[in-house]
Image 1 (cartoon, rainbow, N blue to C red):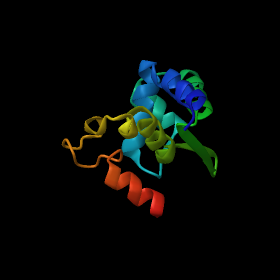
Image 2: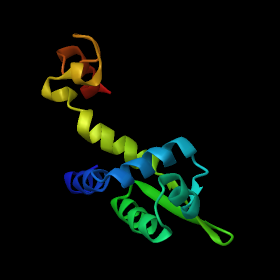
Image 3: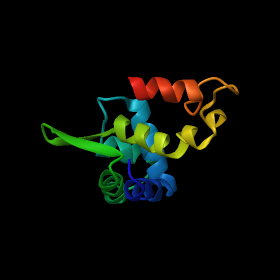
Image 4: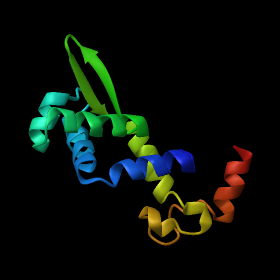
Length: 120
């Protein structure tokens, strides 16, 4: 994920309803949810949820598909994973503990790991 895409994603998530929508869609799984069901769960009007869904889709964090007469929305797990990686994957800047590794484990910057990667 590039910086521009990350900024769009963070901007979309910086609003309470949109953050709740993403969290709800993550729990809903790959089947997703209809816009009306999302609006009901969030306690907002259909036009209000439509606005938020468009912003989240524009940011790339959710996707939609048509099923019969309904539009179903689902979390884009690859995009969400990319956003987390963009934020957290600072290992080679000397911060392996940011990723949750104990000191000395998972350190991609160690000489042994760097040499092994060069020969792979």
